[in-house]
Image (cartoon, rainbow over all chains, first blue to last red; front, side):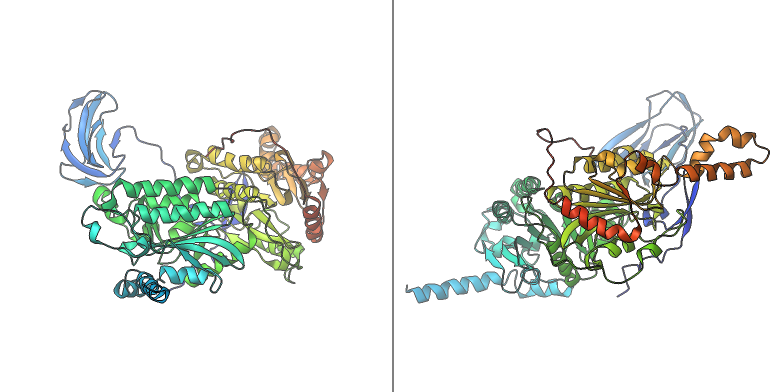
Amino acid sequence: MQPTRQPDGDEPLVPFIVDDTLYETRLTRKARERRLWARPNHKHIKTQIPGLIVSVLVRPGQQVRRGQGVIVLEAMKMRNELQSPYDGTVKQVLVAAGQTVPKDTILIELA
Amino acid sequence: MSLGQRIHDFLQRTRALMKGGGEQAVQKQVAQGKLTARDRVARICDADSFHEYDLFVEHSCRDFGMDGKSLPGDGVVAGTGTVQGFPVCIFAQDFTVAGGSLGLAHARKITKIMDHAMKMGVPLIGINDSGGARIQEGVNSLAGYGEIFYRNTLASGVIPQISVILGPCAGGAVYSPALTDFVFVVDRISKMFITGPEVIKTVLGEEISMEDLGGARVQAEISGNAHFYAASEEECFEQIKRLVTFIPWNNRKTSDPFPPRPPRPGKHIESIVPDDPRKPYDIRDVVRAVCDDSDFFEIQELWARNIVIGFARLDGRTVGVVGNQPAYLAGVLDVDASDKAARFIRFCDAFNIPLLSFVDLPGYLPGVDQEHAGVIRHGAKILYAYSEATVAKITVIIRKAYGGGYIAMCSRHLGADFVFAWPCAEIAVMGPEGAANIIFRKEITGAADPDAMRQEKIKEYQDKFANPFIAARDGHIDAVIQPEQTRDFLLHAIRVSERKTEQRPARKHGIPPF
């Protein structure tokens, strides 16, 4: 059996800044795996939940209106119509019907 | 039939039921490295102390071919016993009987022993090893879970509730442990999740193993659902036996005193803490240097390591220790640390266990993820828990006590009864670097040599504020003490506060920021 409990203090000491002060400390596993925040791109229509693309309702170059359905995503036994967040033009469609997509996948990019 | 024949008949029936799910099922259980339900109960309880009840209980399900099926004990063993001489009510789900599935009769055995624990005022220990709801029983099975959760909630803060996860505990079933005070898990045996890997794969397309999703290590290190992590069932039972000695039977009692013992000779207390407040050390070394027998029983050792919680004894009496841990994340408070400490503080307050807090933190953790995860709401829990607590509250400020972190860590302002500070304590709004950059921004940016000016101003601030004397001048702390006097002051504080009472206005209950 491999050891499962890490001995204390075997992680390296790293610099850590709080209020302009540099501390020497260790990171917890969660802190090590922490992802940096990225500014959301409002031109991207993304999945909020993993699922199956049932149909794509628009094609590149097409004008869409705010609230217009662009993709039907089946997730949690529901068919969800994803809508355009504002009036615009479809720049590209990055998925096709029949495809299973994870959470946070960019489906459509608006111009 | 003569009495002798009746006894013979009774023994025969008992023997049949004691076999649980039968030889094959037991072999399967053992092959997985698991003990049987009765073995587990027997090993947790003192030798020959376990008395089993409701052995002859049977289900009354008539659907899906269940009417012909007899399930020994309906898949759960329940009774009373003693652990280290302390009386307990205990139940253990028996996976060898229909996968430990929970039907109404099974649940009613559990709720009966829970009611008994409440009436007797003794701790409840529940061993979970179950495939989940007995689907054949339909809504009756759900009713059973609901009745258990209801009692877990009513018993909360009245009797200590201990959950031991020794097998799967999935779906709705996880909410009983979640409502209890201490959850024990064992590597490779415990599995807890709301939706299992199969469902996650079909519905979400994400592939993950049971171990990575809800194994013991994950629950102990990532989710914080578990309080104690063990490598084997044996180790887990030892942890349970230790825990029981630190806590009282119920909320009307105090923990049993132990013979007072001095700390063991070890590191000199002054040598533990580095002079430079930016350097790390292990706060547990300070705890061990002051508590009886240097015996510190840590809880949630792997999760939110930037705060340390656990039980120790002073003068033979149990205290609940909360300490910032400079060895991890410089000891900051964050979402998880606040959650961890707040729940522990409330346990101690509910069960008459004095609180001993060690302070050394730079404040709350900065970051988008923390703000978005609700560090305001979660951070407020620790303020709430300390303010609400009416047990004796003793605080030792070791080094840094900055800003909101200073207030949160059981400061005088939240009702601490005793606040002591070491001479190296720095009680201020923030660290010298940050403060100098704000207060002297103009002087620094306008100087010919900004760096030299910054250093000068940092020094100026340090000399003026990086000490305990301003807080002492204004009565925010009671005494500046030498590190080696710490134990004496703590023992004295514990003795003085033994009969502390504090009255609060009547209310149905407070509304903590859950």
